[in-house]
Each structure stands twice: as structure tokens, then as C-alpha cells.
Length: 110
Image 1: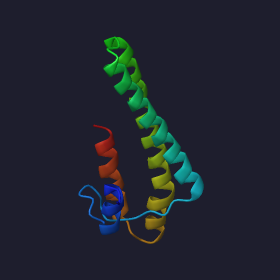
Image 2: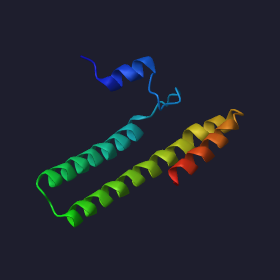
Image 3: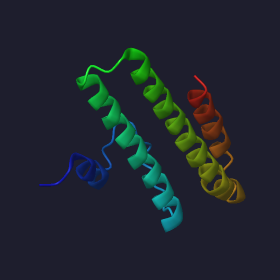
Image 4: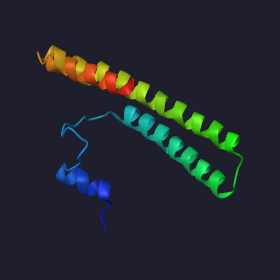
């Protein structure tokens, strides 16, 4: 049976996605995926801490580490986006990508 994410990609039906695609080189893909896997492991660790009735402060410290890891992921992804997608679009004469970038940065800074 196919995963839900596979079905969404096939139909391009993600309600939160723009419908655009980005081909990533192996290095970028592996780096981003490794970061997400580490974050996933951290979240599972917090889940285990909660199930084991860990002290609130200990859980909060781990959640802070997860937040930091997610922020780091966003910084790397944003830098890659600017260096590739945004730059390529500007070179091609598509200045609308600048408005998209500004809106994205505003969302990230909430």
C-alpha cells in the first residue's frame, strides 16, 4: 500500500504546497534528510520522556533543542532556496520570486 505522502506527491494534492517542484542534488537532499531524521529522533525521545514521566524541565530542554534544530534546518533550506531558486528566477527575468521570498521570510519571522 502506498504512503499518504506518495499519493499526495503523485496527485500534487498537498493543500499546503504551491505545486512547484525543486530538483535537489544528492548532497543537498542527503543533508536536509539527515537533519530531519535527527529531529525526528529527538521528537521520539521527548515522546519517550513524556511516557516515562520525566521532569518538566528536562523535557523543556529537549524541546528547546528540537526548536533549535528546526531553525537550523530552515536556515539551510532558505539559503539553498535563495542561491538556487531565487537566483535562477531573477536571472530568467521573473522578479515575482522576490515578493514570494519576502512573504516567506515574513512567515518565518513570526
